[in-house]
Length: 155
Length: 140
Image (cartoon, each protein chain N blue to C red):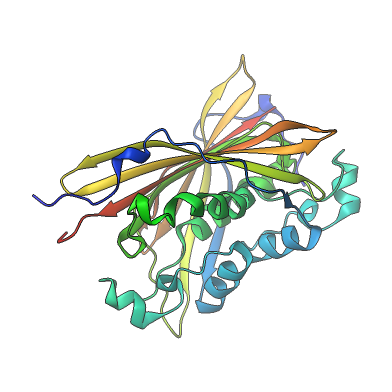
């Protein structure tokens, strides 16, 4: 049986909080268009404010932009030994405290929650805690949990 | 925008459907918008070098596009509390050509105490499910 080369020492690792990601109206609109969304609150500040939001609102999976950029700290660390050419995305989950709005400044903390190896396949689960900066403190916005399946050499 | 009441929902009820159409430009646009430039989503030569028949859609494009049916149905993004899926099958996207995915959103479960509805998304490509356990929790 082949073994995955993923470094198990990374289980439980937590990365330092990222520098702030500034959420822009045009980025929300661009992402919503890329998904074929016709939700007017993604595009119109007027509609969004009519719903009681501070500004246009991001689609549910917008947080993946921020999460994947933050996860790169782990994935691209040579010591982690994650061979990206052998990676398949296995699952993804978003758990919201509140939506993401244009104008948010979001910081992310990446956790490597689990690495499970079986039959030469490594299942790596990361969790991104995404928080908004507000009045010198942070408030939780969304948790993004992602599992990658990484085939071992020879599989 | 709809004004859906919790009381009007029944388990098994289809609340919305949508057909997603992916061609190569859809993938390039999503790559740019998301920052996911993995070449398996735009470069056939690279995709074949890692054992695929050709370019496949980003799983996150399918996941994100599928849930727009719920976002458009409920209207209020703040009601979408949780959304998860497993990726059960890749979607090949030919060049030229279009790959169509049929999405159906059904009420999977109702929690009267929490006033939440679990909306189950079925996404079919060539008759096969491409998302497994795709569930959005909507609060009322």
